[in-house]
Amino acid sequence: MSKEQTTDLLKFMEPFKPETIELALWLRDFAWDMFPETNELVYDAYNAVAFGWSPTEKLGQVFCNVAIWRTNQNVIFGFNWGSELHDPQKMLIGNGKQFRYIPVTNKDDFPKEYMYKLMADAYINALAKVKNPKDIIKGFTITKSISPVKRELKAKVAKKK
Image (cartoon, rainbow, N blue to C red; front, side, top):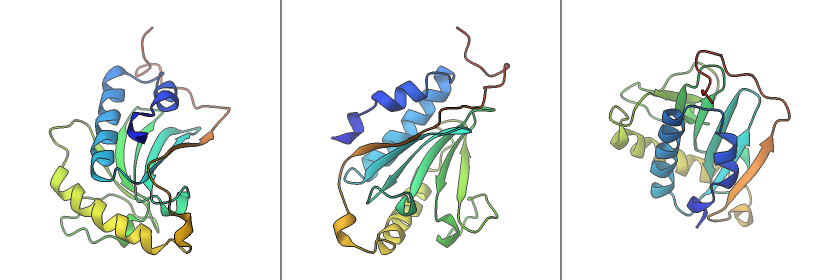
């Protein structure tokens, strides 16, 4: 299954600290275990390495994602359509029209049960955005974008070689 397809993702995460990579991969397992028949879309962007889950191969239907920012190696767990989710505990951060997230600093403080609920709601919301049911595919990891230029890691957080 696609959860085992890590070659590109591990390559993209090489510049980050081992503990940052470990946390991001733990979040990846968390999402894959809940939604094994969705697709992982991977982006090696200028500002971040990001990967998210979608019922299709389209960014517009990504319902949750993980990102590691290049400048500070902060890890976030986000929802592309988070503004449309019911968040009674007001955990999600963001004031834009769509995206909401929580910062993740360690596994122990990550609110798994609450995120399960938000992910389930986000998945239903993503399915509602699929215009053609034939677009739904299952279980792929797809590298969508590789930026030729990357923002440099700050010296104080860069991985020591």
